[in-house]
Length: 134
Image (tube, rainbow, N blue to C red; front, side, top):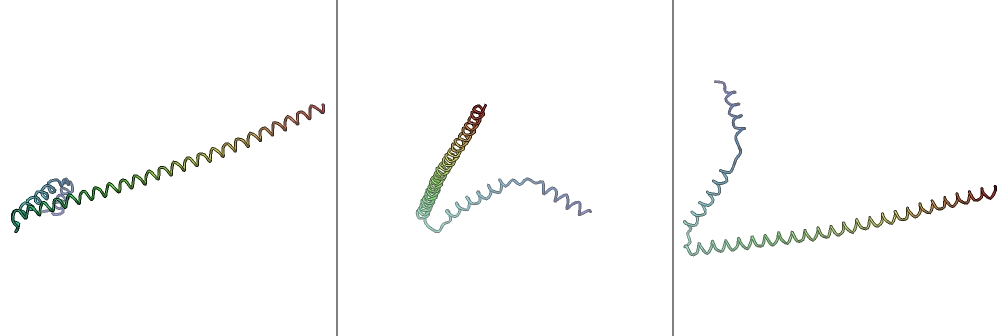
């Protein structure tokens, strides 16, 4: 018998097997539920005490869930406030930079217009001097 072919065919068939774990998860949850029921049924305490303990545990769990929810809610509000503050700072920063660029452009435009006016005035004066000498 050729063992190498047999081993390689087994390994190749194993590698193509789907990795669906739904059945395993369902079996695990079913086992947990059956274990919990059996634990309650065979508990050393009376039924009344067992029900009280279950009720207390359920109330504790409810309180823990409420506390966790409130904690998450508080963190979300704090994060929201932080983001709003960041947004406001960014908007102010952009506005300040836009104003600064606008002022720089106005100053540049005024300086260039003054240069152009001075050049035109010089040309007009030179032309006037040339006309006077004729």
